View 1 (cartoon, rainbow, N blue to C red):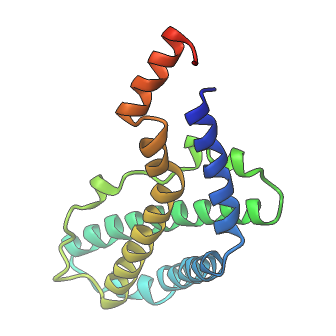
View 2 (view 1 turned 135 degrees about the vertical axis):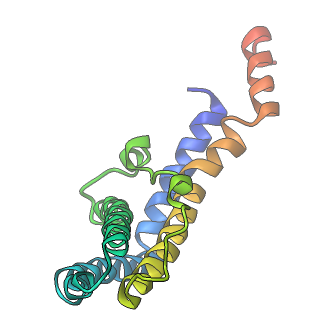
Length: 170
């Protein structure tokens, strides 16, 4: 491991531990889990009733949007549970830095939904889950990815590392 990469790894694991112990994490975790529960209750209750009154095309849109909603929330919940595992000492911060625990890029999640016929309850949940996802994605990138680009993959630092490897330290 190069010195820059070692520094990046130390900074990253320290940042993960700091975040997991923060009030921001506690609030985000509570909000995320409450939204998961609220969504499940809606989809099993009022949402089910709402969907029965939709036209065929709106019902198909409802099914697609409810799948996107639950997928988005499960990704957020999984990410939050990894952070909680770090907080409680069940997972090492370095382990939480693995790519398999990162959030997926939401670029394919940007298709506009045909909102005209969808129930208001679903639309509110879609909006709230999208905002929560964006906040968690921002945290994920700040904690795990941006820092790597700044230090480990920085073009100047990588060239300096190559020069040091070729000519040795002075």
